[in-house]
Structure formats: structure tokens, C-alpha cells
Length: 240
Image (cartoon, rainbow, N blue to C red; front, side):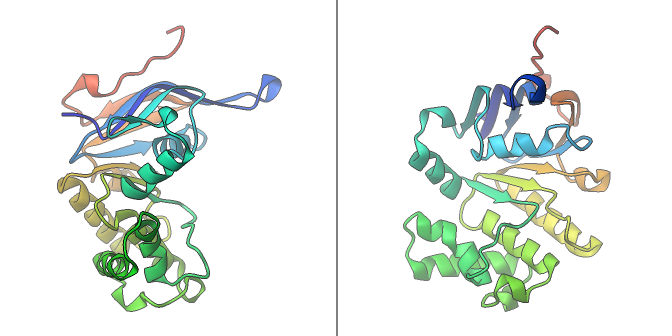
């Protein structure tokens, strides 16, 4: 089965010389349709870097990132933006909602930017907001919502339309236990329906929703559990 997401021998280095930091070190990683992968590790292990590279929000220092077979390095800015709008749903830790837009407008924006008619984009947005349990907040602005409500809007924006890849950075961080379980159930259902999901989490009970758990330390994959295919994820560390 072809991977929706494929990172091949990816490294990311920040800074130069004495300030050089290796955020990721020659990591190869795949996420397949129907699969939810949890990524765990201590702070500074490279978890968020992996997500930003996977979502095309940053470029690797070396290696390649492919989404549905498209090598992001071969695309111009417009091409990468189109992939992010149509194929990738990203749940940020800090929500990244636009303050001047309502919940429905925030969720509909990616669809409208891709040329969807406003009426259809709003209908899709309302459906996504219903899925995350806040249909009554469609016309509220972010500063009129609690942190947990804003998190749900961010998740609705990530799943609106037919997203093939969902990337989530601590998606339940601002939610109470019961609501967090509802969101994880929703992410699980989206993957069961055919999407690929990658979720960064510190919580073992959240990782239990995943098909695989990948452990990062110092930018290197040090362990993996739950895979029946050892070739799915390879660690290629220089000099090893």
C-alpha cells in the first residue's frame, strides 16, 4: 500500500557552527491510509519538527518529504500551498485561528482558498463543527470562546473536506479528559475511513488510540511499537 506521507532520510539542522542544532537526524518515516501513528519523546526530541516538515511548513536540510507521491521540494510555493489546503489538515498547539473570522469562517477558509464556493465551503465547515460538537458556536469569534472551544475549531479546520493526511500536535492539550477522548475518537474514525494520521502526544493513554507508536530522542527514532511491518520505518543514522 502506498504511503500518504513518506519522509526519506530526513534531517533538519538549525543554525551554524557553535549554534548548530540537529533537530532530526536522517529519519525515514511512513504513514499509510487508515493508519494513526503516535509520535512520543521528551521535549526537544524532534517531534514538532517532524510534523512541520510533514506538513510542508518547513523544508528539510537533507532528505525528501512526499505527500501522496508529490515530492514537496519539486513544487513551487503555490504548489506546496495547494497540497496543504487540499490534502493536509494540521492541528497546531496554539490553534492559529484568525481573530477577525468566526468559527465557521475559520474552518471554511482553506476550502474557499482552494476555489470552493462560499456557500458550499460554509456547509462543509458547519458539518465539521458539528462533528467536533460545537455547532452552536458557528458565528462566534475566537475571543468569544474558551481555549477548549478554540481547540475544537482548530480540529474542525483540520478535518474539513476530504483531507488525506491529518497532523496533530498535542490535539487534546486544551481539553478536559472527556472532550479529549471525543476528539481522539474522531481522529481515529477519520483514519479508519482512509486518512493517514500523525499525532504528537506526551500521554500514553492517548497513544493507545494509535496503530503504531514511534519514539524520538535527540532527533533519532529509538523505538517503535505496534507495527507488523518492520520495513515501514527505518532509521538511517550517519556513521551507525
